[in-house]
Length: 234
Image (cartoon, rainbow, N blue to C red; front, side, top):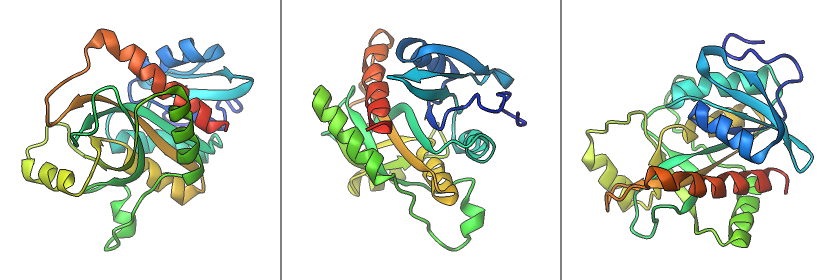
């Protein structure tokens, strides 16, 4: 048990899927895991552990933004022994070729700042995905016929962005989409010797202003979860 996670020793699997929304954690656990059981609900941040094809899996919420994710990922790795951490979340498309409902695999994550910035000081650390997970996720998506993109993404530290010039530069440099957590996840995984990947569903688009209707999100997010699970145990 930690300050933010009430799970007992042995309650957390070595493989953890990380949605931002705790209710999405519940939805994914109930839909994709066998015999899921609630292992954490401290501060309303839900975590469930069950099995997928016989493999132990935990699905645990992280909240919104890098500071919140940093708390849970630090404790999951250091106190519970998590070794493979895959973010499953939504993102906003930033390129014309990236469509709503497509899935993006984050090879790298650019950012203005992260909770880890103070450690690196003047160094601009480049956080990146585990290649084995990324390759397996790409193969899983292709096998399922899911539109897939792999490349750099942008992890913003604000939701209500008032820097259109910054978005323009991200688009100019080929950034596929924007979200708020991956850069810190990749940094923490590198620090602690864990594997990490972000598998993201495009739920809205900064260029076209299209947004995925709420009644269609579940099906699209299901593809993302299946890809993440297949990659974790490839």
